[in-house]
Image (cartoon, rainbow, N blue to C red; front, side, top):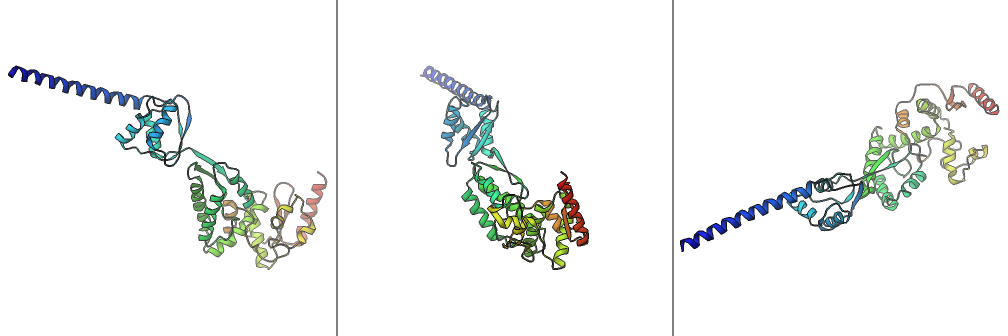
Length: 329
Protein backbone atom coordinates (compact mmCIF):
# COMPACT_ATOMS: atom_id res chain seq x y z
CA UNK A 1 0.00 0.00 0.00
CA UNK A 2 2.77 2.41 0.97
CA UNK A 3 4.59 1.51 -2.25
CA UNK A 4 1.51 2.36 -4.33
CA UNK A 5 1.13 5.68 -2.55
CA UNK A 6 4.79 6.44 -3.19
CA UNK A 7 4.37 5.69 -6.90
CA UNK A 8 1.26 7.88 -7.07
CA UNK A 9 3.16 10.69 -5.32
CA UNK A 10 6.03 10.42 -7.78
CA UNK A 11 3.57 10.44 -10.72
CA UNK A 12 1.80 13.56 -9.44
CA UNK A 13 5.09 15.35 -8.94
CA UNK A 14 6.17 14.36 -12.43
CA UNK A 15 2.90 15.53 -13.92
CA UNK A 16 3.15 18.82 -12.04
CA UNK A 17 6.72 19.31 -13.25
CA UNK A 18 5.69 18.53 -16.82
CA UNK A 19 2.69 20.88 -16.56
CA UNK A 20 4.87 23.69 -15.26
CA UNK A 21 7.40 23.07 -18.00
CA UNK A 22 4.69 23.02 -20.66
CA UNK A 23 3.12 26.20 -19.26
CA UNK A 24 6.48 27.94 -19.10
CA UNK A 25 7.34 26.77 -22.58
CA UNK A 26 3.96 27.90 -23.88
CA UNK A 27 4.32 31.31 -22.26
CA UNK A 28 7.82 31.67 -23.67
CA UNK A 29 6.52 30.71 -27.11
CA UNK A 30 3.74 33.33 -26.88
CA UNK A 31 6.22 36.02 -25.84
CA UNK A 32 8.44 35.08 -28.76
CA UNK A 33 5.50 35.26 -31.20
CA UNK A 34 4.42 38.66 -29.86
CA UNK A 35 7.90 40.24 -29.83
CA UNK A 36 9.39 38.88 -33.05
CA UNK A 37 9.54 41.49 -35.87
CA UNK A 38 6.55 40.63 -38.06
CA UNK A 39 6.06 43.44 -40.60
CA UNK A 40 8.25 43.07 -43.68
CA UNK A 41 7.05 46.00 -45.79
CA UNK A 42 5.36 49.29 -44.91
CA UNK A 43 1.60 48.89 -45.09
CA UNK A 44 -1.67 50.45 -43.99
CA UNK A 45 -4.03 48.70 -41.60
CA UNK A 46 -7.56 50.08 -41.52
CA UNK A 47 -9.78 49.28 -38.54
CA UNK A 48 -13.39 50.43 -39.10
CA UNK A 49 -15.52 51.28 -36.10
CA UNK A 50 -17.03 48.18 -34.51
CA UNK A 51 -14.33 45.78 -35.72
CA UNK A 52 -13.77 42.96 -33.19
CA UNK A 53 -10.35 41.85 -31.94
CA UNK A 54 -10.99 38.50 -33.61
CA UNK A 55 -11.52 40.21 -36.97
CA UNK A 56 -8.32 42.21 -36.48
CA UNK A 57 -6.48 38.97 -35.71
CA UNK A 58 -7.75 37.43 -38.94
CA UNK A 59 -6.77 40.58 -40.87
CA UNK A 60 -3.23 40.38 -39.43
CA UNK A 61 -3.03 36.73 -40.38
CA UNK A 62 -4.17 37.56 -43.94
CA UNK A 63 -1.39 40.16 -44.14
CA UNK A 64 1.12 37.48 -43.01
CA UNK A 65 1.89 39.54 -39.90
CA UNK A 66 0.60 36.89 -37.48
CA UNK A 67 0.84 33.16 -38.27
CA UNK A 68 -2.24 32.43 -36.14
CA UNK A 69 -5.38 34.58 -36.00
CA UNK A 70 -5.81 34.06 -32.23
CA UNK A 71 -2.39 35.49 -31.25
CA UNK A 72 -3.57 39.12 -31.37
CA UNK A 73 -6.82 38.60 -29.36
CA UNK A 74 -4.89 36.73 -26.64
CA UNK A 75 -2.31 39.53 -26.40
CA UNK A 76 -5.06 42.18 -26.21
CA UNK A 77 -6.90 40.39 -23.41
CA UNK A 78 -3.86 39.44 -21.34
CA UNK A 79 -2.24 42.89 -21.48
CA UNK A 80 -5.46 44.96 -21.61
CA UNK A 81 -4.75 46.70 -24.94
CA UNK A 82 -8.19 47.23 -26.51
CA UNK A 83 -7.83 48.70 -30.03
CA UNK A 84 -9.30 51.95 -31.35
CA UNK A 85 -10.77 52.34 -34.81
CA UNK A 86 -8.59 54.17 -37.28
CA UNK A 87 -6.10 53.95 -40.13
CA UNK A 88 -2.64 52.85 -39.05
CA UNK A 89 0.79 52.82 -40.65
CA UNK A 90 2.68 49.59 -39.98
CA UNK A 91 6.41 50.02 -40.42
CA UNK A 92 8.97 47.28 -41.20
CA UNK A 93 10.18 45.21 -38.24
CA UNK A 94 7.18 46.10 -36.07
CA UNK A 95 6.19 43.21 -33.82
CA UNK A 96 2.67 42.07 -32.94
CA UNK A 97 3.09 43.78 -29.56
CA UNK A 98 4.13 47.02 -31.33
CA UNK A 99 1.00 46.81 -33.47
CA UNK A 100 -1.21 46.15 -30.44
CA UNK A 101 0.20 49.25 -28.71
CA UNK A 102 -0.25 51.41 -31.83
CA UNK A 103 -3.88 50.32 -32.20
CA UNK A 104 -4.48 50.81 -28.46
CA UNK A 105 -3.08 54.36 -28.45
CA UNK A 106 -5.03 55.24 -31.61
CA UNK A 107 -1.96 56.66 -33.39
CA UNK A 108 -3.70 56.95 -36.76
CA UNK A 109 -2.24 57.99 -40.10
CA UNK A 110 -2.73 61.75 -40.57
CA UNK A 111 -3.73 63.35 -43.86
CA UNK A 112 -3.11 67.00 -44.75
CA UNK A 113 -5.44 69.55 -46.31
CA UNK A 114 -4.40 73.13 -47.05
CA UNK A 115 -6.73 76.14 -47.08
CA UNK A 116 -4.67 78.86 -48.83
CA UNK A 117 -4.68 82.41 -47.48
CA UNK A 118 -7.17 84.57 -49.36
CA UNK A 119 -9.40 81.67 -50.45
CA UNK A 120 -13.10 82.45 -50.70
CA UNK A 121 -15.80 80.03 -49.57
CA UNK A 122 -16.43 78.71 -53.08
CA UNK A 123 -12.73 77.81 -53.42
CA UNK A 124 -12.60 76.27 -49.94
CA UNK A 125 -15.71 74.24 -50.66
CA UNK A 126 -14.07 72.86 -53.81
CA UNK A 127 -10.89 71.93 -51.91
CA UNK A 128 -12.84 70.01 -49.27
CA UNK A 129 -15.25 68.46 -51.75
CA UNK A 130 -12.37 67.12 -53.85
CA UNK A 131 -10.81 65.41 -50.82
CA UNK A 132 -12.05 61.83 -51.03
CA UNK A 133 -11.57 61.27 -47.30
CA UNK A 134 -14.02 63.98 -46.26
CA UNK A 135 -17.81 64.15 -46.41
CA UNK A 136 -18.62 67.66 -47.63
CA UNK A 137 -22.22 67.58 -46.42
CA UNK A 138 -21.16 66.63 -42.90
CA UNK A 139 -18.37 69.20 -42.83
CA UNK A 140 -20.75 71.94 -44.01
CA UNK A 141 -23.24 70.95 -41.32
CA UNK A 142 -20.55 71.15 -38.62
CA UNK A 143 -19.34 74.51 -39.94
CA UNK A 144 -22.90 75.89 -39.95
CA UNK A 145 -23.29 74.83 -36.31
CA UNK A 146 -20.04 76.61 -35.40
CA UNK A 147 -21.13 79.79 -37.19
CA UNK A 148 -24.51 79.75 -35.45
CA UNK A 149 -22.77 79.57 -32.07
CA UNK A 150 -20.17 82.28 -32.86
CA UNK A 151 -21.59 85.83 -32.49
CA UNK A 152 -18.88 87.33 -34.71
CA UNK A 153 -19.82 85.14 -37.68
CA UNK A 154 -22.98 85.05 -39.79
CA UNK A 155 -21.76 83.51 -43.06
CA UNK A 156 -19.50 80.75 -44.35
CA UNK A 157 -17.27 83.38 -45.92
CA UNK A 158 -14.28 84.07 -43.69
CA UNK A 159 -15.23 81.39 -41.14
CA UNK A 160 -12.48 78.94 -42.16
CA UNK A 161 -9.08 80.08 -40.96
CA UNK A 162 -6.47 79.53 -43.73
CA UNK A 163 -4.00 76.88 -42.58
CA UNK A 164 -2.68 73.38 -43.32
CA UNK A 165 -4.66 70.95 -41.18
CA UNK A 166 -3.93 67.32 -40.31
CA UNK A 167 -6.74 64.84 -39.76
CA UNK A 168 -7.28 61.10 -39.46
CA UNK A 169 -9.48 59.15 -41.87
CA UNK A 170 -11.88 58.10 -39.11
CA UNK A 171 -13.98 61.07 -37.91
CA UNK A 172 -11.92 63.35 -40.16
CA UNK A 173 -14.69 65.94 -40.54
CA UNK A 174 -15.03 66.37 -36.78
CA UNK A 175 -11.27 66.59 -36.26
CA UNK A 176 -10.85 69.10 -39.10
CA UNK A 177 -13.74 71.20 -37.78
CA UNK A 178 -12.35 71.09 -34.24
CA UNK A 179 -9.07 72.59 -35.44
CA UNK A 180 -10.75 75.19 -37.66
CA UNK A 181 -13.02 76.22 -34.81
CA UNK A 182 -10.03 76.66 -32.48
CA UNK A 183 -8.04 78.68 -35.03
CA UNK A 184 -10.95 80.89 -36.11
CA UNK A 185 -12.10 81.49 -32.53
CA UNK A 186 -8.57 82.50 -31.46
CA UNK A 187 -8.34 84.89 -34.40
CA UNK A 188 -11.68 86.55 -33.57
CA UNK A 189 -10.80 86.74 -29.87
CA UNK A 190 -8.13 89.35 -30.69
CA UNK A 191 -10.91 91.90 -31.16
CA UNK A 192 -12.64 93.51 -28.16
CA UNK A 193 -16.23 92.72 -29.19
CA UNK A 194 -18.06 90.41 -31.61
CA UNK A 195 -19.10 93.45 -33.67
CA UNK A 196 -15.49 94.64 -33.90
CA UNK A 197 -14.44 91.10 -34.86
CA UNK A 198 -17.07 90.92 -37.60
CA UNK A 199 -16.02 94.27 -39.08
CA UNK A 200 -12.32 93.49 -38.61
CA UNK A 201 -12.70 90.20 -40.48
CA UNK A 202 -14.41 91.97 -43.39
CA UNK A 203 -11.74 94.68 -43.58
CA UNK A 204 -8.91 92.14 -43.28
CA UNK A 205 -10.38 90.13 -46.16
CA UNK A 206 -10.26 93.24 -48.38
CA UNK A 207 -6.68 94.01 -47.33
CA UNK A 208 -5.72 90.40 -48.10
CA UNK A 209 -6.95 90.75 -51.68
CA UNK A 210 -5.54 94.26 -52.20
CA UNK A 211 -2.01 93.76 -50.86
CA UNK A 212 0.88 92.90 -53.13
CA UNK A 213 2.91 91.72 -50.14
CA UNK A 214 2.55 91.37 -46.39
CA UNK A 215 4.81 94.33 -45.59
CA UNK A 216 2.39 96.84 -47.12
CA UNK A 217 -0.73 95.47 -45.41
CA UNK A 218 -0.54 97.97 -42.49
CA UNK A 219 -0.27 100.81 -45.03
CA UNK A 220 -3.34 99.60 -46.92
CA UNK A 221 -5.17 99.31 -43.60
CA UNK A 222 -4.28 102.93 -42.82
CA UNK A 223 -5.73 104.05 -46.17
CA UNK A 224 -9.05 102.35 -45.49
CA UNK A 225 -9.24 103.67 -41.93
CA UNK A 226 -8.49 107.20 -43.16
CA UNK A 227 -11.17 106.95 -45.85
CA UNK A 228 -13.73 105.67 -43.34
CA UNK A 229 -12.93 108.58 -40.98
CA UNK A 230 -13.46 111.07 -43.82
CA UNK A 231 -16.70 109.46 -44.91
CA UNK A 232 -15.17 108.36 -48.21
CA UNK A 233 -16.08 105.11 -49.95
CA UNK A 234 -13.45 102.38 -49.83
CA UNK A 235 -13.44 101.95 -53.63
CA UNK A 236 -11.76 98.55 -53.52
CA UNK A 237 -11.57 96.60 -56.78
CA UNK A 238 -11.59 93.15 -55.09
CA UNK A 239 -15.00 93.89 -53.57
CA UNK A 240 -16.36 94.60 -57.04
CA UNK A 241 -14.87 91.37 -58.37
CA UNK A 242 -16.34 89.39 -55.46
CA UNK A 243 -19.78 90.85 -56.15
CA UNK A 244 -19.54 89.78 -59.80
CA UNK A 245 -19.07 86.12 -58.79
CA UNK A 246 -18.86 83.82 -61.83
CA UNK A 247 -19.32 86.62 -64.37
CA UNK A 248 -15.80 87.96 -63.73
CA UNK A 249 -13.51 86.88 -66.58
CA UNK A 250 -10.25 88.42 -65.36
CA UNK A 251 -10.84 91.91 -66.77
CA UNK A 252 -12.30 94.69 -64.63
CA UNK A 253 -13.89 97.51 -66.63
CA UNK A 254 -15.17 100.95 -65.62
CA UNK A 255 -18.71 99.69 -66.18
CA UNK A 256 -18.15 96.99 -63.56
CA UNK A 257 -17.17 99.65 -61.00
CA UNK A 258 -20.44 101.44 -61.67
CA UNK A 259 -22.64 98.34 -61.47
CA UNK A 260 -24.16 98.15 -58.03
CA UNK A 261 -23.96 94.95 -55.97
CA UNK A 262 -24.13 94.49 -52.17
CA UNK A 263 -20.32 94.17 -52.12
CA UNK A 264 -19.43 97.03 -54.50
CA UNK A 265 -17.58 99.62 -52.39
CA UNK A 266 -17.56 102.05 -55.33
CA UNK A 267 -21.36 102.34 -55.27
CA UNK A 268 -21.99 101.77 -51.53
CA UNK A 269 -20.72 103.37 -48.36
CA UNK A 270 -18.88 101.55 -45.61
CA UNK A 271 -17.86 97.92 -45.47
CA UNK A 272 -19.49 95.20 -47.59
CA UNK A 273 -21.96 92.92 -45.77
CA UNK A 274 -19.60 89.93 -45.54
CA UNK A 275 -15.89 89.12 -45.88
CA UNK A 276 -14.72 88.42 -49.41
CA UNK A 277 -12.21 85.69 -48.44
CA UNK A 278 -10.47 84.05 -45.50
CA UNK A 279 -7.71 86.53 -44.57
CA UNK A 280 -4.25 85.66 -43.31
CA UNK A 281 -2.90 86.39 -39.84
CA UNK A 282 -0.88 89.22 -41.42
CA UNK A 283 -4.05 90.89 -42.73
CA UNK A 284 -5.73 90.54 -39.33
CA UNK A 285 -2.68 92.07 -37.66
CA UNK A 286 -2.80 94.97 -40.12
CA UNK A 287 -6.38 95.71 -39.06
CA UNK A 288 -5.41 95.56 -35.39
CA UNK A 289 -2.18 97.55 -35.84
CA UNK A 290 -2.51 99.77 -38.92
CA UNK A 291 0.28 102.12 -39.92
CA UNK A 292 -0.21 105.73 -38.84
CA UNK A 293 -0.32 107.72 -42.09
CA UNK A 294 -2.31 110.40 -43.87
CA UNK A 295 -2.64 108.29 -47.04
CA UNK A 296 -6.05 108.04 -48.68
CA UNK A 297 -5.05 106.62 -52.09
CA UNK A 298 -2.92 103.77 -53.41
CA UNK A 299 -2.28 102.35 -56.85
CA UNK A 300 -0.22 99.44 -58.19
CA UNK A 301 3.41 100.42 -58.80
CA UNK A 302 4.04 97.75 -61.43
CA UNK A 303 6.61 95.98 -59.25
CA UNK A 304 4.33 93.84 -57.12
CA UNK A 305 3.45 96.56 -54.62
CA UNK A 306 1.61 99.87 -54.41
CA UNK A 307 2.38 103.59 -54.39
CA UNK A 308 0.61 105.48 -51.60
CA UNK A 309 -0.43 109.12 -51.58
CA UNK A 310 -2.23 111.65 -49.40
CA UNK A 311 -3.59 113.90 -52.18
CA UNK A 312 -5.50 113.30 -55.38
CA UNK A 313 -2.86 115.23 -57.36
CA UNK A 314 -0.10 112.95 -56.12
CA UNK A 315 -2.26 109.89 -56.71
CA UNK A 316 -3.00 110.89 -60.31
CA UNK A 317 0.74 111.31 -60.92
CA UNK A 318 1.35 107.75 -59.68
CA UNK A 319 -1.49 106.49 -61.88
CA UNK A 320 0.12 108.08 -64.96
CA UNK A 321 3.50 106.58 -64.07
CA UNK A 322 1.92 103.14 -63.71
CA UNK A 323 0.11 103.43 -67.05
CA UNK A 324 3.32 104.53 -68.79
CA UNK A 325 5.16 101.60 -67.26
CA UNK A 326 2.51 99.18 -68.49
CA UNK A 327 2.60 100.64 -72.02
CA UNK A 328 6.36 100.25 -72.24
CA UNK A 329 6.35 96.58 -71.26
